[in-house]
Image 1: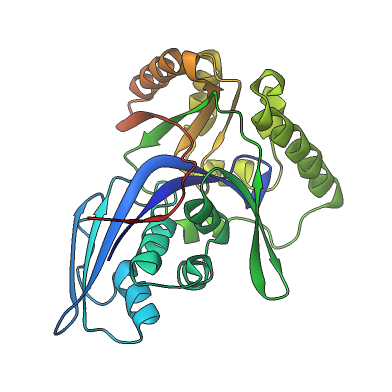
Image 2 (image 1 turned 60 degrees about the horizontal axis):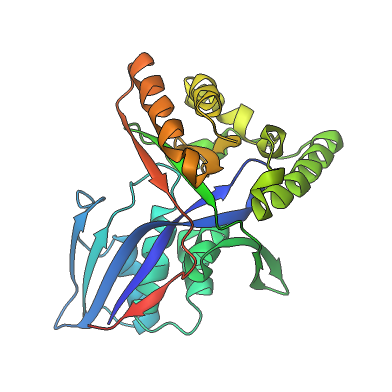
Length: 283
């Protein structure tokens, strides 16, 4: 069986570990019976070990209950760049292997329920753990929004990015983020109300900046190019400019110039929300 799942951007500023949006880059995973475990991949992440340690293999074997499988992965999603590549692989593998609850499997094995929820459901989502299970809320998203992704050729492992976050936060900072989250959800639902302050936060972006010191200047360039709001994508290092689709080309050009000025290798992608989420592919 073959399945597809989209990339995603989590957090979007103030929505740390809760908010994510599915994006139109995709991972396909095919799982078929075999005499022994066979793993292969192409595209992004094809340099990863093609063995039992591969995330798609671990998920498929867990769902199937054995390792007599042939697992093939085809990915468009850059690895370790904050675009939910692992969650997309885990969700696609779970669906391809026949999991009745792909989100539960992906969140358990891969560990990022926000990205996995967006990959499963598509669109803009909030995820909560209630009574030991993950509950996904689909939220309004203006269809005219585009996401200009500035993707440096510099990986940033999520574990490293999470290690710099404090275990406790001040009440004032928590209140700040809750207020900004309300602004953000309002603006994502209607671009006419999206404002730069909506993606500011006090819980993770500033703390992670020492891991990617060029980020503030690049975010400013996205805004100068016409982005209505800017933020880190997940744990980074990918940065996002949220804008009207008509303005995306000029925002992207500003991002390219900023990369050049910073002497950074990287890509600029104009992405849109995926609204389908994970699905099986009929051959």
